Length: 286
Image (cartoon, rainbow, N blue to C red; front, side, top):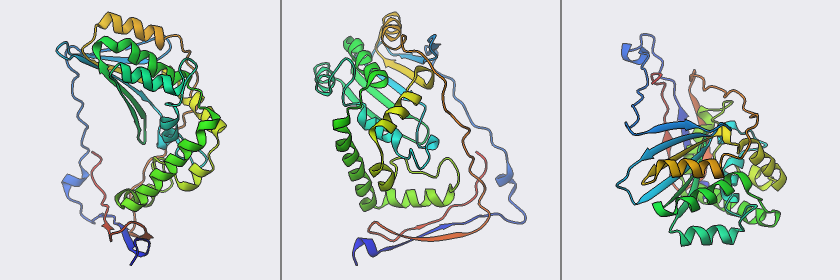
């Protein structure tokens, strides 16, 4: 049989009993660990949250900015836009061309990458401590001043469509997305982070640019600097490169919660190269 004719059986089973185990009905509280003693949390006037995690023994510094938007705030018209932006922001800014961005990062010995989740998109820049200004300059250009060139949009669109095809062929992402649709249908977690082939193929550059301008604002970000760095120098550079960007109102709506499973749901999906049986059970709150 070819891989496209393999049947995948997915089951979502509610494990509600007439006399539930007391352990299952406990309201367990989450555990929040205290930050390190030398951690510092600040906020710029434009709403950007800043976290300093110094480690003087480190010769490297990590610059991590989490933009608080991901697939949980998308709908079918915008499905996959957060992840698409992760690709597009490496394509040049007001100050630097795409070639400049890569060349400056390479010369500084930087690792520059990003990834997208349900609730945020994370941009990371790791480089020698002596090059911290280069890292903050390049990342702030990507976050606030990207051009998203029209001529480069089809290439990135093709890359994301290729990722979707690969994830279907690999199997596990296909199974995960299928189970997600069953368990989270009608909630903010229903849509896959990568989007779907249909939503990505129909995506237009101007719509993605509008999405970028709506969500990529300082009052919707958390910037963490970790490793070997001078605290006062880092703060001055953050004020210089991130501080001038004005805040704005966010189009954030309340997330739609996930309901309890009330019945058994059986669904057969074709995809991947293996047979899979997935079972999901109701669990304690935490």
